[in-house]
Image (cartoon, rainbow, N blue to C red; front, side):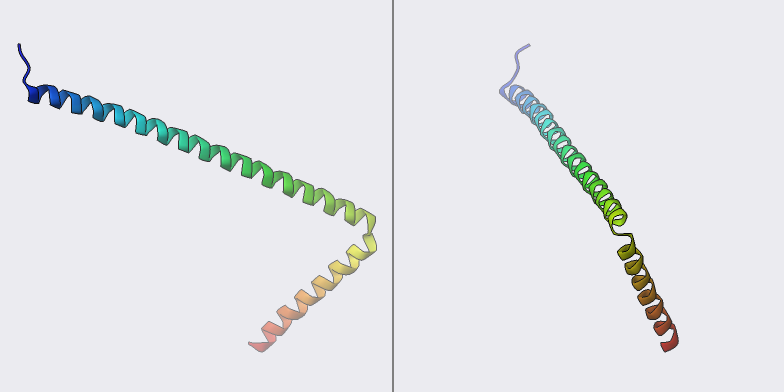
Amino acid sequence: MPQTVLDRATEHIAESARQASRATGGVADAIIEDGVGVVRRAAKQGGDAAEEFLNDTGQRIQRHPALTVAVTFAVGFTAGALVGWMIKRR
């Protein structure tokens, strides 16, 4: 059964569309995987930085307990004064 030029062109276009679809899907998958990798690395670095900050803070508190108590008292007193002033204004 002879195929016409139009039939062959139609099949060729359909095959090209399938290949383009597969290639696009592969590229999209690669981009998504790269994005997930970036997010994972950023989350790990953020977690490591937070852990290091907490460790440094704990060590500083242990080295300077009197200063820690004084600063905590000053911050609490200031916050209380601001809240009292805001309530009084209303």
